[in-house]
Amino acid sequence: MKIHETAFITCAYRASDPELSGDRYACLFGNELTDRWVRAVVGEVSPYEPFLHCLRNRHWLDTMEDYFRLHPGGVLVNWGAGFSMYPFLIDGKIDCLDVDQPDIVQYKKELLAGWVNEGRIPARKVHYLEADFRQEDHDSLLADVRQWIDGRPSFFVLEGVLYFLTAEVTDRLFKTLAAAQQPGDMLGCVSFLPEAADTEVQHRLDDFFDRNNLSGDTFSHQLLSTESYRQREGYRLTDHQDYCTLSVRYAPQRAISDRKAILNENMYLLERI
Ligand SMILES: C[S@@+](CC[C@H](N)C(=O)[O-])C[C@H]1O[C@@H](n2cnc3c(N)ncnc32)[C@H](O)[C@@H]1O
Image (cartoon, rainbow, N blue to C red; front, side):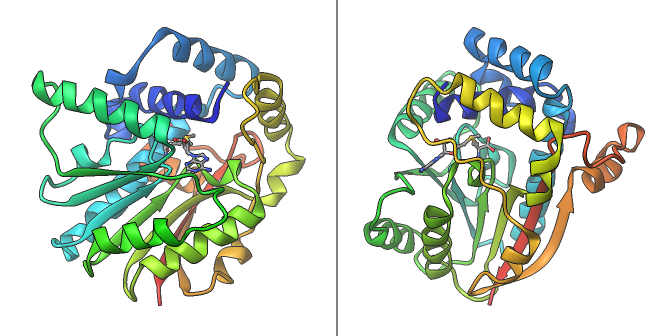
């Protein structure tokens, strides 16, 4: 598995319940190889993964919609966007930027252009930036993002990415994010807590990626404490959810109470100060 294949997998999870995830277009990315990976994760790691990723998408979709209601001239920047379809799910007037590795960006751009032509998805103002967050020097990435934002209010989302990055790359990336945002802008992040390292399900996930990493890509298994978000320079933590709280909100009939039984990602909303 390569890291970019994980983008297909999260997309397939969202497609499993479009009503819950809010992503009616995720199904378009479906393919047989991804279906095999999904069956493997569901069988060998955790059966909850599709449901949980639907909750995650719905949470950020609702959160960014709230932000854009207050800031109709705002922009969305999705860092490590994969095949997320937020630009097609939110108000079409919002300008959006997907940042990801070149192979993902090129493939997604081509697919979306074809689907717009075929009338399968609406035309949207989506821009793309190719980047590898591991690159030592983020100057040109920062300059490109700043130029694109052009002083407009911004909502950044960074989900499904931090697990794969090292602490050093993460620190560099957060500095870039802070430098690209202005006070009042928002940043949504997703990561696992260090406590998760003691759970069997997290061991199974780490082991699954290690066993199936045939690419030499880095799967760093990074875990981040809530305190690390409180300490992030330039940001104030304004909201913190996990899959248990989101399940109560969005699917009370399937509410999850045992945090250790699932791959429990935490959702942090930070305000640039
Ligand atoms: C699990 S996918 C998540 C995609 C999307 N955010 C979602 O939630 O569906 C991880 C994404 O992070 C991107 N990614 C991982 N490491 C990266 C890096 N060093 N630089 C840029 N993007 C990276 C991958 O290319 C992939 O699209």
